[in-house]
Length: 77
Length: 227
Image (cartoon, rainbow over all chains, first blue to last red; front, side, top):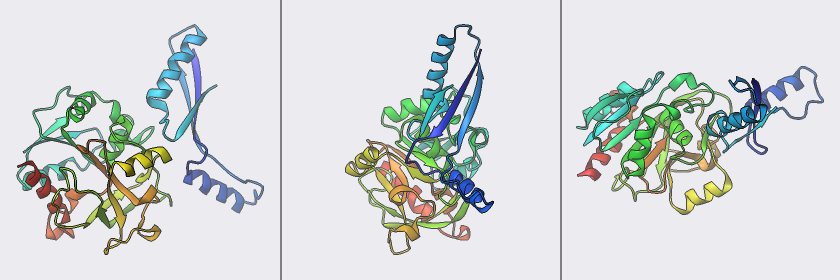
């Protein structure tokens, strides 16, 4: 079963790459872009048929490796 | 004093560290990341570099490697653990040190000499160090130290901030902060001050032909405090 995870920086944590992308977009005449936050996307193939169990495994993975909870939040989608 | 330098795939300051430690009289051994145990040591060093290509987050993969359990056990039993640059990043990812090293504020890889102020001398690394400001070298893309307000307060309350970026005269402000680190932090201790992580490379400043010798003071001081 494929589980998808999005990891993003927490609100308030400086995201210089997002800022640079925003400024570039603004410079390309996308003037209405007010903020960009860059994140990471994972597709994890888990050998598990039960969706609940698979998601709970991935939740554990997020806490232990995929996200650093000091600065990042994660969302299983 | 016996030391061990851990080599991860992608470490690139391991040999420099070996040369530096031996120069000052450490009995150093190199330890591969896939080993399970560390030879009897008084100091373990996690060197600089790009362990596992900096994949996922700098230091995150190395922080789960086979040897790390021994490093954590050694640290928890009071042993001296020193992480330089990528080693500092690995230490934060293991949880031995608080916070995280984020990408530099201006998105640039910085390679230059900097001055750092020694903020605490009640520890085995800096006790009785003759200088308060050291000239060391930094080379990193992710050195922008960040932690939560609560963590920062506890670092300050327990004097766990080890070194901060400053000017030659010791002035600490935004202009002497190369990477945007909170409070100009260049290095921190754990609560017991046996674990030290810092971005600057003392091993690059051990010879007058290497643009400075303040790194020599650092290594000699660790040896002096061990005696």
